[in-house]
Length: 69
Image (tube, rainbow, N blue to C red; front, side, top):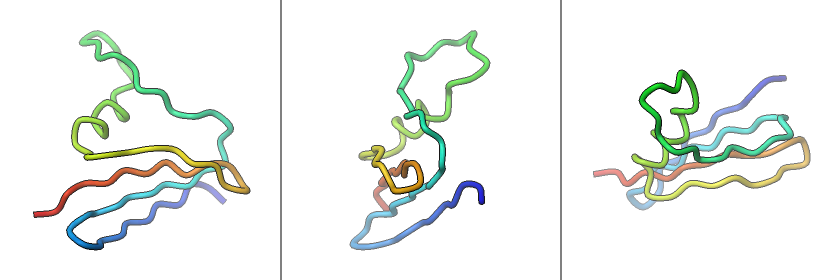
């Protein structure tokens, strides 16, 4: 089974969480206009009010929270 994405809405906050079995953790990289990759977490960080990573029994969950309104 591959990645699983969930979206929750509660008290004006939209929380998105993606589970995967990968062993590495995402790291926010400095922006670079010449980089052809590494923009995903930079965009999430810019739009989300908070984000993080947590371990699961099968790998990890990467989550982000965005204000709704």
